[in-house]
Length: 139
Image (cartoon, rainbow, N blue to C red):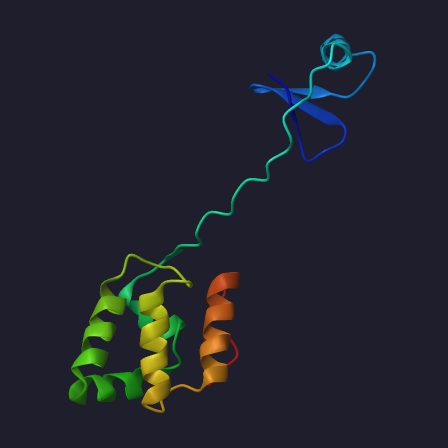
């Protein structure tokens, strides 16, 4: 019936949030309910939704990667079917999920080809997680 909240000054009953103020009749009703031997449900922190970053081909190729990285990726796509597919998937994506294993695999492929370093991959993922352009401040 009642649930604790993240705030010590608020109790929840359904969609009603009750201030923990002894002048409040709903709070006095809660105290009587507890005095009768009942226990409020514990607070449950909301889960963080998966971060989805809206993506367009321009964003995917020009905001995540630097112009030099884009050029190198296109060159690699001419000789690597795997990179060509990853580039096409990235360009067609409607959103990017930083934790997506396919994104991780593609970035690892760019590392294997010498286009990115491990540090650059880390920078890209950190920037995506924060919602900033990954090529922010890079040449």
